[in-house]
Image (cartoon, rainbow, N blue to C red):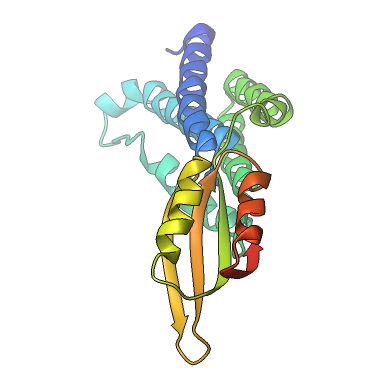
Length: 225
């Protein structure tokens, strides 16, 4: 039988493991970060504990009859079903994915409902308390975690052979990581349009880099987002 202490320890360990993974993802600016991983781990633990409880409750009768208990079947069906509902909460735009935490909340809510439905109110209550802790308290903690941010810079330039090397040196001088580097050459007007995907730990481009780009006589236009 599961004791209250066992349930608490298992839920806390699952939350801690999920949070640790989430912090790493948050640090790299991914859409599914700290709270999303926390909620997914919590929901998984809640459903798994409940499935094992079902097996525990019917173990005696299963040994003396044709009844066979599979602790994973109910949990598996719920997880599959709630996945479609969670997907509807996720919005994907050009540079932003939102709704992941909401989708995770729906998933956890399903596991809490299963726990309450089988009469194990302590498990449902503990999962609810930890979910509220994630939503109310961890939200403020997320802003304290340094994040990688991704930007696109588009430069319209007069063509000259060393231009790309000059731009790369500018980026390196400001310790900016280049993710991808592409260009198109307008031979008729002798213009080069350079598109650079970069990674930063700040919300804006360094002012020194912007000044250098604007001061370069070969660079006609600078657009970044």
